[in-house]
Length: 106
Image (tube, rainbow, N blue to C red; front, side):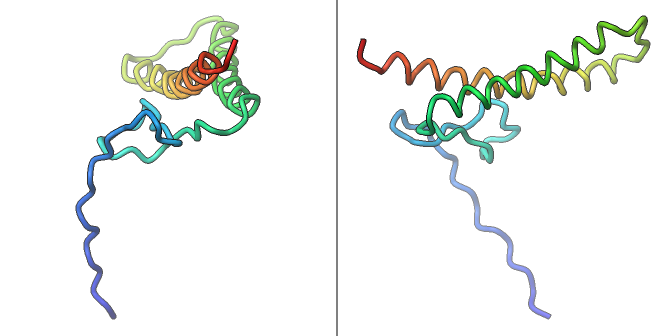
């Protein structure tokens, strides 16, 4: 059996404005693993943002329809994180759309 070799140390990625891939702000470490392809068609980017934001809206609307929701602060904290991650991702995609639209000639 061969011995496992450790991964080489990671180099921190320094964002550059001309990069095609933009790291999501919700990455949980200094070494991002989730990115947005900033050059895909705008309608695809819009669908991605729309999907994430509407998913959170659906969850929150379902919670509002319940009579009472009793839970402790840890559950509320986890629920808030569950909602914040896709909302942040959707907003990141909307930022890309905004930058692309503002760069278009009038």
